[in-house]
Image (cartoon, one colour):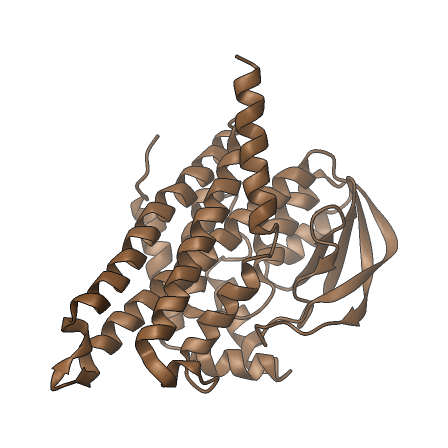
Length: 330
């Protein structure tokens, strides 16, 4: 199993990073949170030109036909920059789900072109859509049946850039069969990559901050207690990263243990990112507790995504069930 990335994948990640570096993403995110979706839609179009929404769409429908490894590379960059919008649903979940639905070719083409933003819910896993702001299409999955849906009651998220809402089924699109489970795994994995990227960004910002913040005439980063806090975060993130990459390889290979690998990755990435968030908040001191500070964008996003596409308890249970099942089969 090869845990490195290809030159093409590294170039793609660099292109995404360069684009997002040129954009004031925190300002875009705050505008999105206040229902000014114009800057976010413009950014969506720029990312679509690089092929992000087309990654998992097959070439027949204008997509790239890439795999889960490409997906986690891209979503790691999105997480590092706190890009707002229903990207997991539109670029990870819907393309896989709609492969199994007859007559969904037009929707797949629209996805690949970046003209369609999707809100989605799976009744057995996530009965409420995690983010409907800016969505053009709402999809509700019941069992293996896929329905177009209308948006019902809205709710408040700790992450102001996200708008959870109930979805009400409107018209049946068709049966997606086994692609439902694969779509859920891709969505959970993309979420894991996103929170991992956010955790890495918060660690980098925390390290930068403790190098310039002084106390008793010295940068606080020179104090051993601060070094240990940041080192613990680094270790957690470094251990989570190969689990995320390994789960992507398992999905691409159609491995029998792919679902278990995805759940393990989601648990590890979320735990590591949350440790990074708490530590970054701590070393930033009082300034880190303000919503005006950019740290809040990553902190609240990680908190909100910790339960997206399966809570930590749900994924831990999936790992345990898979291990017990494998043990009993021996």
